[in-house]
Amino acid sequence: MSVQENSESSQPAPYGYTATGRIRKKPLKSSVRVPEPNRYEASRNTNVRFINCSACYKDFSYQFDPHRAVWKHLQHFASKDPKHEEARDTFKKEERKEKSRIHAANCRARNVRKAKRVSAQFAAKAKIQRNLRRAGEFSEENLKKLLEEKMVEWDIEN
Ligand SMILES: [Zn+2]
Image (cartoon, rainbow, N blue to C red; front, side):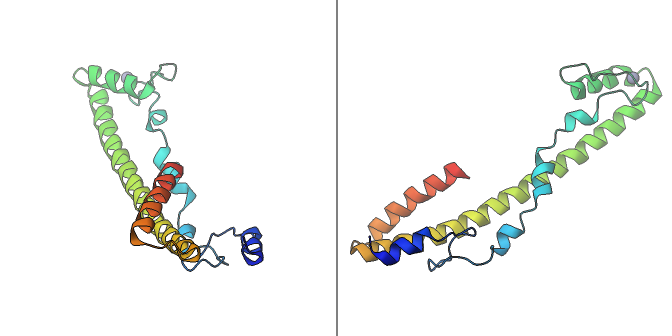
């Protein structure tokens, strides 16, 4: 390894490298835009929101799955009591809203990952190309093989 390579690799690169292999001075816009709250939202457990009956206030928090227990309770009493029927309909609506909210959050997370993957692939390709050329072993075949290996690694880590 040459001296130049040594000093290059020992420099800290908290934001990674650019497509041309330089140390990135600022974080990528796409990495800034990944908001933490989204991740929290996506993984938030809906079950904790329904731990008692909103019609008779019966407590189900001791149950293994309070959400399911409240639902069963509401289903059972809906045909007997209009208050419970109303509570069941509200429960249904809330649940539908929650589901679509989680779905949207998951879609956002998936898109962010996709964008990250594309940029990682781009950076990896440039780096592999450079290294192969340096070593005098460049061929499309080698590039493709190494890039595929690299992306398998990336998929495991991300
Ligand atoms: Zn009840």
